[in-house]
Length: 419
Image (cartoon, rainbow, N blue to C red; front, side, top):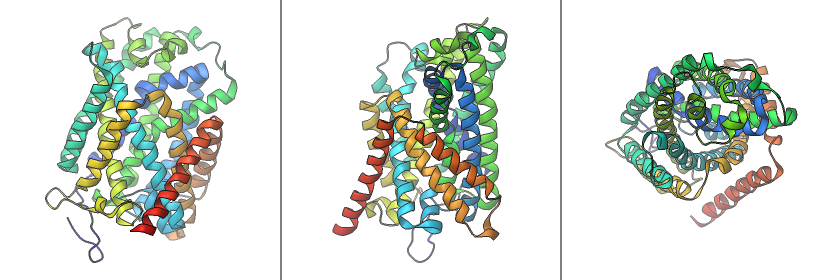
């Protein structure tokens, strides 16, 4: 552990470009492509392919905004830090709180997504027991240091990517154009709502920015890692989605928690379904690992500024990780895994993360001119996309998200008043 500016605790810079890209891919290639694709298909029909394109534009603009912010302010906390430094402490807190609300829920619910794919490999296991067990295992792994976590993550990503590339190659011959008709049964609002869901699936690159304090040469490494991650994910998502919908149609995709496995069973090579199931399991594990990494660092950053209880800013002197934050975040995520569902959390998590990225784009606009890597058009596109996708969600989801934000400010005021 190093210290920066007196007694302010800091984290060890242990991650290079390959580590950062691996963490980004581990966060993206999981619930989105293996599970949320089916949810989006059920909302929009084949027009969810348009939703993928819209979400990709929004994600790319947000990725570039996050890249230049993380390069200029390479500290744990991502948009939480940027909001504080460039905008206002209230904006920073709002970003951090919404990140925690979105990703804690998602970490628990994504762990549940293991069940649909794991059942094809090892039938009969209890889904909630598997979900909670996965969170416990990866919480313990995080306690023993970010480098060790990153190496495990790289192995997980390799298996997941391999299974998806096989899915595309083996399934191309099973594509049927009639499965794309009718193309937009829910109209274009359905396509927009599916884009909001799928945007949530693209946002794993944020984990790179959240871990900025642990990246070597952050001004050079972070932008490169984010662009490699989002570019690769866009190509992969389109390839897999087109093959899946062409093979079985959106109704069958929406009817299962394991849409890619269902599509693979329709291929000329049904054994591919087993490989895809293994890839789905490893991808879900990768998401849980990377979510817990980013969440614990956000908790650490917020505690360091007094927005969460001070005991969470403690850094273990041997491993150089915020162990108390890791354990608390893991415990809360395990509770969510024991009580929540993936389908319920997708829309809610999408709204909260869109607020987070809206603040990131605003911060990118307000950066000093000489610190900017990209023109103002980039964060403007990102901001417009965040607002448009957020309002496309249902009113109950929007109100719930605003209620979560208001609750955060009440708790922050109470913490500062009584401590």
